[in-house]
Length: 118
Image (tube, rainbow, N blue to C red; front, side, top):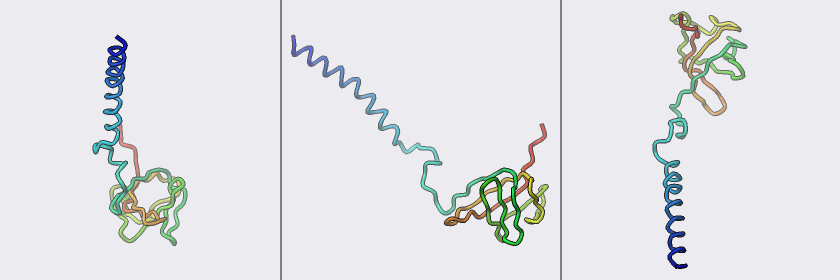
């Protein structure tokens, strides 16, 4: 009798442990979200917010707390038309993409961000 109780207890414990082990395996599946993947040099990040500083001499724009370098390859648009950094002013709401180069944040695109008409 004691052996059968012990055997049933072991079997019950095993049945309880199996689903836990299966769930633990799921957390390392290959279906992880893309943001958990290691960054590559080609990854572009997005930004948006109000401009707090524009420096046309240093070719930088500060959006919130981040300063982005504007390079010769940065695609800049305003009102849907090609623009320059000088076309933007403090207080403008902008959006864009950037690439991280060491400690530098290089803007790849910069455009005026207007709310869509409702």
